[in-house]
Length: 75
Image 1 (spheres, helix red, strand yellow):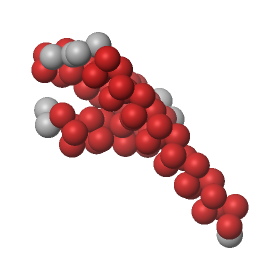
Image 2 (cartoon, helix red, strand yellow; image 1 turned 135 degrees about the vertical axis):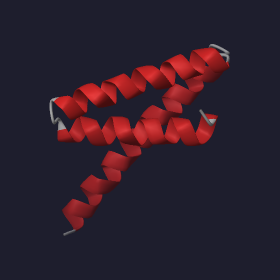
Image 3 (spheres, helix red, strand yellow; image 1 turned 30 degrees about the vertical axis):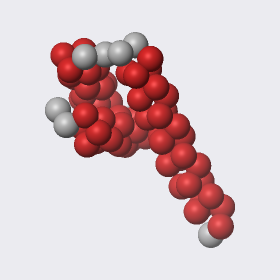
């Protein structure tokens, strides 16, 4: 049971780490609203592709990333 909890925590940690890297990229490149919208649209397209191929791990990953981007940048 502890192994399962550890794996779930590590999955979330990687997702949060990737989101933080994406935020750092947005800040470093000084992206404007339109560019952030294009980035969000690209992540959404990745989610649609993962969903169409039924890639369960990828669907969850892109869905989580898209949710965090929308909540943070309000698009």
